[in-house]
Length: 384
Ligand code: PLP
Image 1 (tube, helix red, strand yellow):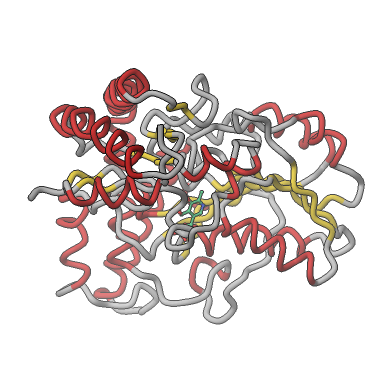
Image 2: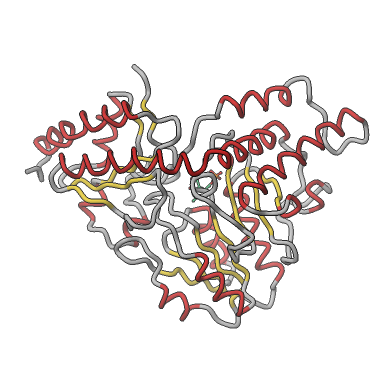
C-alpha cells in the first residue's frame, strides 16, 4: 500500500535534490568549518553559501542568518535574547494560539516573574487587534507572534503590527516555521526584528533551523561556548543539514508561486468536496487568509482520532492537531482559543499538503472519507 502523506505541517520528506547535495557532507567532506586548513575551509565556504540561500528566500542579508538546531531553538533564542537585551523591561506579548515552542517558553518566563499577555483570537483564528494595542506598554520588551498557524494555516497581520511596534521601540519576533517556503516573505518590507524557521517543514532534514536577526538588533546568544556563527550560536555547525537547508530554500524560492497555485487548487478541491459530501462538516480558520496547503476540518458526531485511524488503514496520513500535541487527547489549544465547540474540536482533522501530493491522491481521499465519516457516525452513541 502506498502512503498518501497529508501531514506536511508536522514534517516533510527530504527533497531528493536536497539529499543529493547533503551526501558528500555526511561522508568525505567531514571537516570542521572552523579549522584553519583548506579541508575545513571548503566546508566554511559551503556553510556561507547555504546562509546566502536561506537569506535569499526571505529577503534578508546573509549575515542576518544564524543557524540553529530547530525551530524551537530559534524561538527560544529570540525570546531569551529580547529579555536579556532589555533587562529593565519585564513584559512579553504573544498570542493564545502559538506553537508550544513559544507558548511554553513564555509560561516558563512567567514562572520566573515576567509578565506575559496572551492575545486572544476570534472564531476564525484572527488576532483581536483591539486587545493587542491595549496590551503593549512601556515595559514591553518583545512581541512574539506566529506568521501562520500550524493547525489552521491562518496568517497573522504582521505588517500592520510591525509598523505599530516600530514607533514604540518594542522588539518584534515572528515564528515563521510554517510560513517559510509556503508563502512569499520579504524582510526588506516586513518590519520584524527576528524570524524563526525550521528545515524539516520545507523538505530539508530535521534538526536544523535558522534565526533571522535584523542588522542592528540587540542580540544575546542562547547557546554559549565556541565562537561559531560569529559568537551568536556556539556549537560545531551541522554542516550537512545546513547545506540541505540552503538547497531546500533555493528550491522553495524557485517554485514558490507555481507551488502556491498548485497546492491551493488541490487543497480547495479536497475541502469543497468533503464539505459537500460529508454533512455537518465545517472549516476551522479564516478561509480568506491562510496558507495554501492547509485545511482544518471538523466533522460533528465523530472523534478525529477515530477518523485518523481509519484513514491510516488506507495508508493516508493526516493529523488531528499539532504534531507536538497529538498523542494526547487534550483538545487543541488553538481550536479552543477560537471558541470552537468541544464536539467540533474532537471531530477535527488537519490535512496539510506538499508539492509531492498528486491529484490522484486527493481524489482517493475524497472517495474514501465520506464513507468513513458515515460509518463512524453509525457506530457512535452520539451518531446521527
Ligand atoms: N513553530 C511552529 C509554528 C511549528 O509548527 C513548529 C513545529 O511543528 C515549531 C515551531 C517547532 O519547530 P521544530 O520542530 O523545528 O523545533
